[in-house]
Length: 325
Image (cartoon, rainbow, N blue to C red; front, side, top):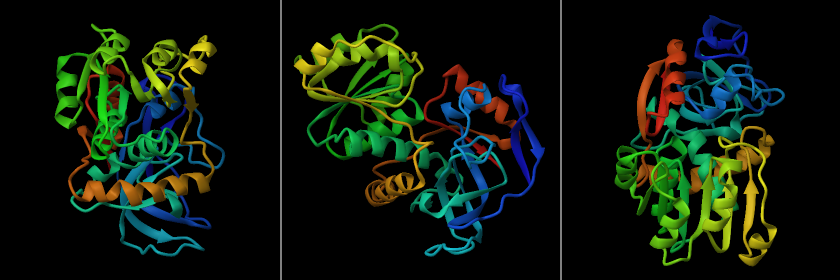
């Protein structure tokens, strides 16, 4: 088969479509003929040499895919050859075939085509696990989503609205904010021109956000704490703004607030399976009903993954970037 390889870390040109050995479905795994994969920030970091796959995962990039089951390994039940699926991966999505632990498979939701389904697993699992399973967002609360026009952001807006929350977002520029508003965002903050802490307080009568979903890390830590409501929960899922910052523990205590930081890729298989099962139970019905939709900015041939990475790094997109075999 062919897959995207990374011989040496570097720029987008480091992604090379090459012939590689076929994967084999091991115990508890299925083999999927890939129809599409999607580009995530983690793939960019892997290409640059900063984010190695976890032990045992494919060395090829790609944290999600959609396709059809080609073979079923020992110990797998409930799936059949030919089933159309999408999947959360530890790696290997940028390829014609990938072996997937059965617990990380999802059926393609009703109303979503096979290629577009590749836009769903990573964002749905990330948002549901962090905003709902960890941070416990409830109806009537306010959530602040940083990077509202990203793949994660577009999913977070829709899921939060679906459960009856008020949604605030930060994004860069009026066009991206307009797309966030179309998806249901209530409070629109241009981080290039506005102070998100002041804008959020003004919009909430000084209360702040009950939950903040943050992709920036260190750069936003102090301001995120300022923006939290009493009993607020900050969920850090990205470090685009650095890894080290000072924290005023007195302010954290005064607000009785909580900070969590999680990653999805390196979790044990049983934890990933639990998250996937929760997504199938809670998110998939919303997708099937048309209340939550995958947002796709553009689709590229997988052999041209370098162009998709250039688009990702330009931050000119809204939603997901897909790669098709």
